[in-house]
Figure 1 (cartoon, rainbow, N blue to C red):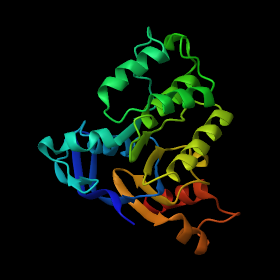
Figure 2: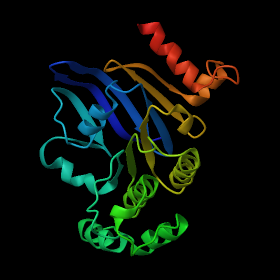
Figure 3: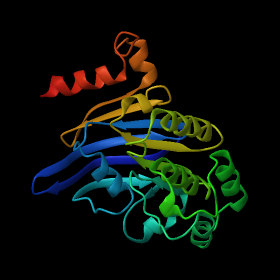
Length: 242
């Protein structure tokens, strides 16, 4: 399968933290769980993938294009982003937000956007400032998917949501990734959200990758089983490197 994201020897130094020697890839038709406890370097890595933080070293390739200089403008339209915090103008409604996004993306699909609003029962004329956190996360996902991206990058999107909404959210991801040449990089510390839909698992700890493997292999090797779920497995991996 084609590698939609490829990262080689990525590094970023801060005064009190360092992401170092990160090398991994994300393939088409896959959901990759990017796991780790809070402060492990997940958000810093995603910011580098999005061009929001400049790496000190290393190479990022997205959809076959190395990310340096103006090359970013060739891939941004193919990337959907869902973050843990709402970035909306809360005095607007979902219909008005759509008009902003529609102008920003050449491949925006208004019919798809309306269908998603109905699917999630989100009102298009109600001010976003009156939405619950769960409603805002759903709207973030709808906006990310309605311009038909090839890559979906997600940073702790389900943090603080109730279990039912988290289940709906993850089920929609699994359905979406099967519908075309797409992939998802799902950063989370809520392991139950990703355990049953992930094809690939990357565990980050103290700014380094301590495990990079397929769920199929982990299950076949019985590293993950009914007696030892993904969360217990991750905690064991972290404990082994301390």
